[in-house]
Image 1 (cartoon, one colour):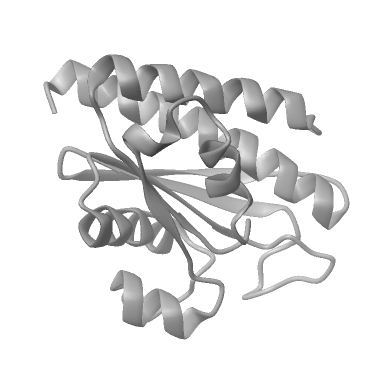
Image 2 (image 1 turned 90 degrees about the vertical axis):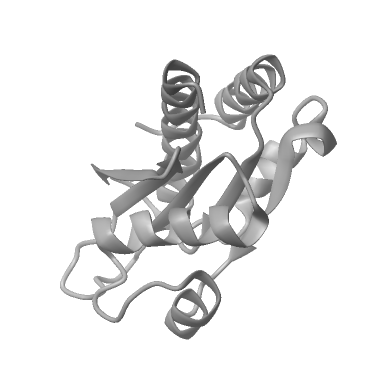
Length: 164
């Protein structure tokens, strides 16, 4: 996929407009992306009005303790969904997105580098999507940020349709 910083910045601006237009608050839980996602959102227009904040839970123990992720593999759809639900609850947000996966260069939990799960939470419902990215760790992180912003937009539009 190999995206540029400009693409992520454009997506973050779309999130900002959507959040402002729909009066939604946003929270982020990150593992793989180590703060890159919330940083992209924080640079978007009027972030202080709609961005509740983020939790960087790189260590598995932090995922469990802070975000209430249940024991088990952390490179999983379940973990991504629980991270999103956990950060939404912790930060009192309408919509949340989470990233977990393997940036590389080595495998983790039997998963190949580039295996990424993006989770979201909106209106009491969680979901996730599996991505498989190619490239060096930096490219995987960039692609993950763009994918997470895209999934966040989808979740925000879903919240609007449900009246959340």
